[in-house]
Image (cartoon, rainbow, N blue to C red; front, top):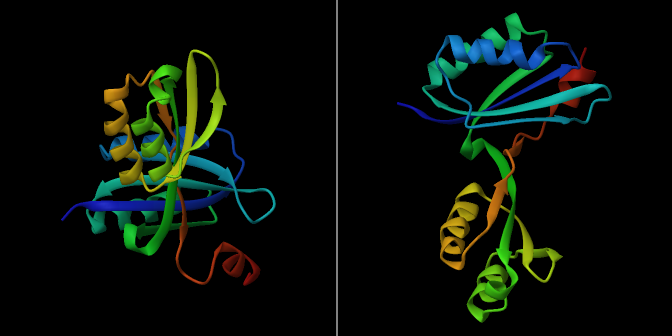
Length: 170
């Protein structure tokens, strides 16, 4: 049965790494739902976070292929219950819509912060679970939302050990 998995792998900066990653996924006809690259806790290393919906066996094989084909230090895969994750979103609304009480109440309910307040538009920021952001998007559609953007997932595995423990074990 297919379910959502978060793959996390660690590597040093390499030329063509994103292309190699894309080739592994495209050969298996697996689409990214989210793709993020960031610095990590080990100096000179990067954390890749990729979200897919596939079977456990497919994701396990994918993890092994990533470790074999791409020069990565370690690749993990986790279900949503095994990670802590959030996303950030920015919303731009006409300022005259924002001054309505129900929009301000909605933003307070979702702990949104004002980022920019201009005469013609207002930009809000929210950091939350993907589902909460999706609910807010639907609600804001009725208030003439100008645009929005949502970040990729950022996630940490709930296990008490991290890459540093594995890295120092060498």
